[in-house]
Amino acid sequence: MIEPTLRPASAHDSDFCFKLHEAAMGEVVTTIWEWDPVVQRHYHDRWFVPDHLQIVVAQGQDIGALAVDRNPGELYLGRIEILPAWQGRGIGRWLIRQLADEARHDRKSLTLDVLVANTRAVMLYRELGFREVMRHGENSLKIRMQLEFE
Image (cartoon, rainbow, N blue to C red; front, side):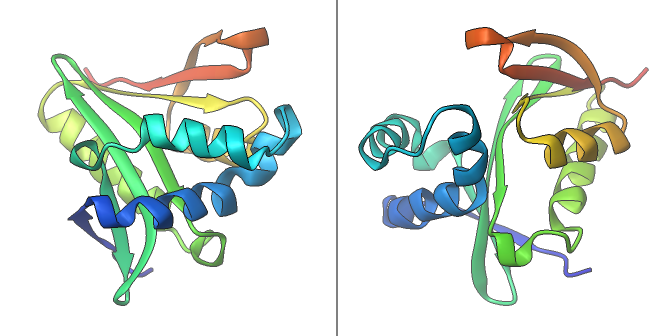
């Protein structure tokens, strides 16, 4: 397994993050709604805040993005996306385990939301010990999952 590094995002990463989102999540988004480039660009422009984002780097290449909010009592994994060519290599699992270690150390829970249609991610989160807390959003399309430590 290649251990990735993280670097702070900058405004220059906007196009990479948009293309990453399309590559990593386009099929899931299309399953639920449709991939409308104009709508998705608008969504991206609202979401992309470099100060709240890190770029995942492996072998000198930008391969993903990670957004984590560190709140009192909780780490919230707002986004984890890895380019398809890099998926299945344990990189996402490794990143989540690092966050789980941080949460455990700080005596916080690790929480995330995942689209119901993203079955591969749901399976990964369950394998890592996350439990479903609730379903929410339009037509309950999102699953809130949580990893708690005693």
